[in-house]
Length: 182
Image 1 (cartoon, helix red, strand yellow):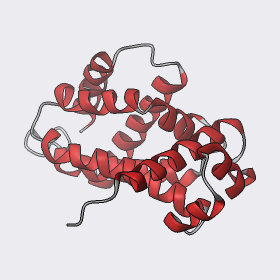
Image 2: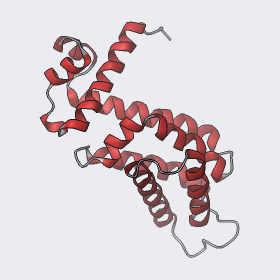
Image 3: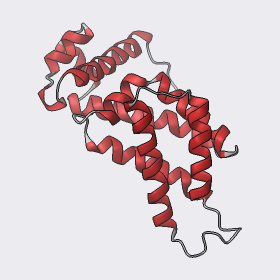
Image 4: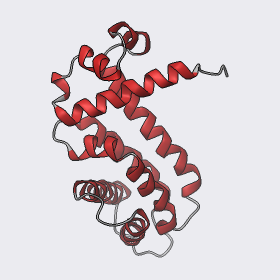
């Protein structure tokens, strides 16, 4: 795999940061390519070297965050709930600007929440307790929808309220609740 030039990575990061910052100030539909270029301190043409348009930029930004969380899924599934969720809450904390904009803002596209929910539901599929019999009368799709929606809602609540508890505490609370649900 060819190594990507650090200048390209730096430019793409500046563009992603610019679009998120602008989304905290105004509706995404009102943001122009020129706004993004000005905020990132690049030429308009530079944006088009990397992205088709502002929607492609936002989509790639969302995709990169979902991929980073997906990489955590591979090893987190081996841990108990409370420990497995710690890196996720730390990730949300580290990327507060992105998640507060995408989850807590009414201006953010609904597609992000939908994609995040789908990603969690997919990750929870292997976690349903069928051994104990306590979920015998429950359908998998209903349980996944319930747990995924509750988890996304909890993350939204935590972010909207300024992250009132440390990531480890939130992971423990969420872990207990998800363990009861699945």
